[in-house]
Image (cartoon, rainbow, N blue to C red; front, side):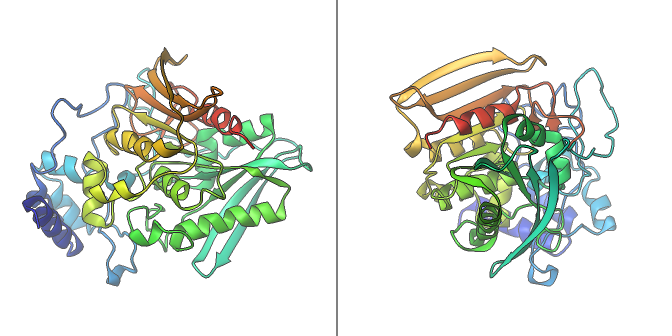
Length: 400
């Protein structure tokens, strides 16, 4: 076992025991940001300033879910340890912080309002359902556009930690796009019994395999929607943010026969972590070597802010590395600036006909938030390019 592994093991043991201050002391200096990295976003004053340890890791006594730290431990742990706060702050999408939108610089310190419900067009429906199989049970919401009857595409949207289907729908504006362009949207919901902050458990090896755990549940929800509604089976896609993005990457590996393409926003590669200790490391500095054995077999589009203080941007590179097998050989790079002012670099790999098989959008100056999203939802960056519209364009350009 390497010295670093021993440090992570000891920090994990102390955290599980509720000795968070001691865990931070062990980690102090061992997970410092890479040289030259930023410690916060000029436009996003909340980035990197959590100051709170998010959760006590899963253990048998907690029912394999994340739980809040004891107030006395949290108060002790956050006092006088800025480097340690940086190491643990933001773990698994800042689990213990209330979800808030990242706001434009013109509104510094603007208090987050309660996320608004996603609008529903006349004749459309936003239905609540529950799916159950041998892997467990999960609720989900389904947007049914007002114009339906003939087979339509389906987009499955996986929220990030602390988010809900309604919050995610409002922030991504995917329901509005569904109404505009004619497709269904399913929003699986993580339960608090499975994870105390509503995070998809992407870091557990049991949730990185076909027909097991959460991938089986999400695939089951997808199939149930396809069974109950007129869905074109050749046009089914999945996308997610952060923990949801990591789950989408896993589905691109485990269910290439079900999903025609995937979108990963601010997420991690399949197999990036296999336990709590490697989850710390992956979010801070990228995947574990074991992730190299996975490959995404479907077209993939990735968005990631280069000032992301929660999930290191190198994770976006590593998702793209897993997608190389499905990508084309013609590479082009385009640069631009969104109407809101955020610049981007988009690397496109296309097939012989010019159809994009992979796209990697690096958002310059953006943090851990859905690009081009609405401030009505949490973890959104309204000033960036419209990730929802770009993902949909990419999805629908894939051959049927």
